[in-house]
Image 1 (tube, rainbow, N blue to C red):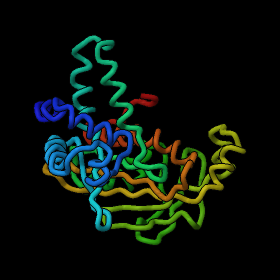
Image 2: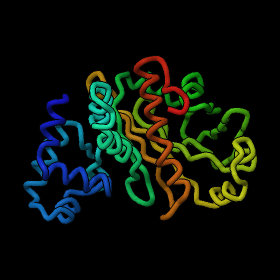
Image 3: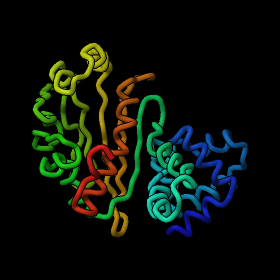
Length: 264
């Protein structure tokens, strides 16, 4: 797999495509062609190579086919090779890894895709079962996970109950969507957050998060989409920094039995 990634990255045109997706993830073929002044046929061929290496994934939305940068192969290379060489010589690669993981798709949504060596059934438990969520997320959900059911969030000693916290879609082992939690005074007090800042977050329109699970051989492709934000959303900025670490901890838990160490 490393060879495929290195070959894909060796071409400057393909690196330019990845740079374009890094700046503005979730582009159509037409947008990529216009942004890079490349012929449609050339872009299509380069995208096929990048997709074969796992560096680009696609998703159909209506009539459009969107292309997303997938950081996982770069993460794997970074994890494998950083330990073999002096860290200072590979700091640029580490910086790239961080940038790829924390880039929102647009100014109104965040998308993150990773591959986890597990089964859809086990990953579903990782997303819904409090035994798992408590370990890598530090919270529990009180719900029966049926479409339309209310969700109570329990984060440490804080209980966040709100009738607008609902399961939006529930297709076990395939797709799960629910509304994001409410920003309450209790939430602010428990984590010593500025009450005025949290009140400002609470005035934003409610967002939602969707998890798509797709079996890929011995792996499950997990795509997380957090959307429904207004342009300039502070909540979007906050979750964009939190999701990559959270999903990395989920992936580690599923594959090794232990989540990432706290603060890693």
